[in-house]
Image 1 (cartoon, rainbow, N blue to C red):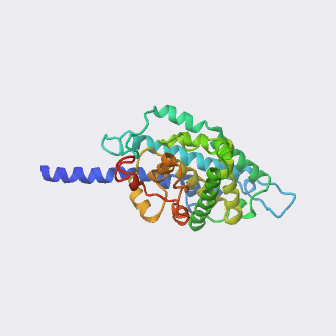
Image 2 (cartoon, rainbow, N blue to C red):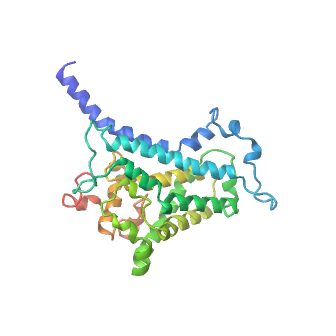
Length: 311
């Protein structure tokens, strides 16, 4: 191979290889996808008896079956594990020919051992424990709209996206209230999460119980009552929401971030603006609400002093 051809090959590889990390997006939907695709050996009708999931919410004598709840929690867990697995390879240069990815802030990414970050992330009681308790309580005590207990059909992608948009809109309002309602409320709710002025991916659920209730659980329950969907769509939404929240806390920029900026989707740089300066970018998954509320700041406005270029 001539040097010119090799150089072209290396440039293409350098440009395309980081995009392998984009596998994280379909990976979020692994469980509901494999369990609803026609012909899949893992299709739920092949694995579970109908009596395990058949439930009539209109029958007062009938009780919700725990299978949907269990699969929902498992869907988020599988999505999280695949997300963290891919992030390991991204962080340590497997997708960038041995180079550390571009950090968001000019001070660089915080140093830490991956194992420490993983243990810290997975052991947060205000994250996964509280969320699992919420899911169990609302499911088993019949507090969800009846459509959520239905296994009929597959993932409704339109409603999945709608759930994400509604959730983030309500979360934007709750987030601003936590900052502005009163200094005491901010101190007890959201301030513990703001000790991370240069966050890492594993800081996503590291905050307080009150913060999780106000900014995640209340919007979740409101969204469930505003957008009615089946159990598979609920799983897809839940996994996408939990994993996207983790991704925007990343200390590094991702290859898809430029595209996300164009359409107003939330990126790690957008969320670092909030952690570093507190007054801007209260949205998480979408920057639309900040644009409407005039609280949006483009990360480029803080480069090159606080943030790196092209994040």
